[in-house]
Image (cartoon, rainbow, N blue to C red; front, side, top):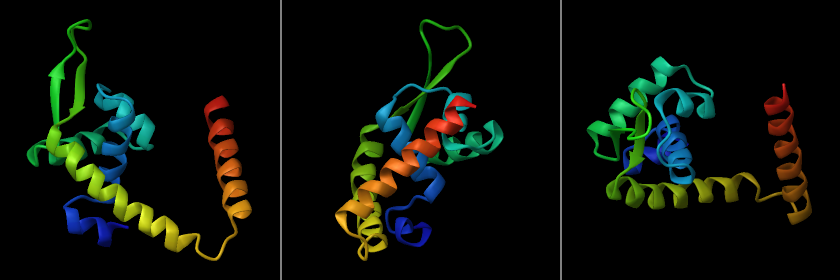
Length: 120
């Protein structure tokens, strides 16, 4: 995935962070790190790189004095559309030998795994 995402200028961890921000704008560095299963220090480096590329911006949260929100920029949204196509192609290749039923069962099983981790 890193190799193919390099065509649009992001790494897999950067893509993951952008995808999460697409779903939930305004997360703090710590919140984003938890969602990506990374340390806050690692996420700080990832966000710094994305910010340097002008794919995200950070703004103080008006309702919380110390929280800094991370937001996708319009450039980030454009890049993410391209990256989604790349990842969808990879997923299609990865599941090409599975039936639709097997793909759906895999999705259900992975969702249950995530739920189990969230409950613990």
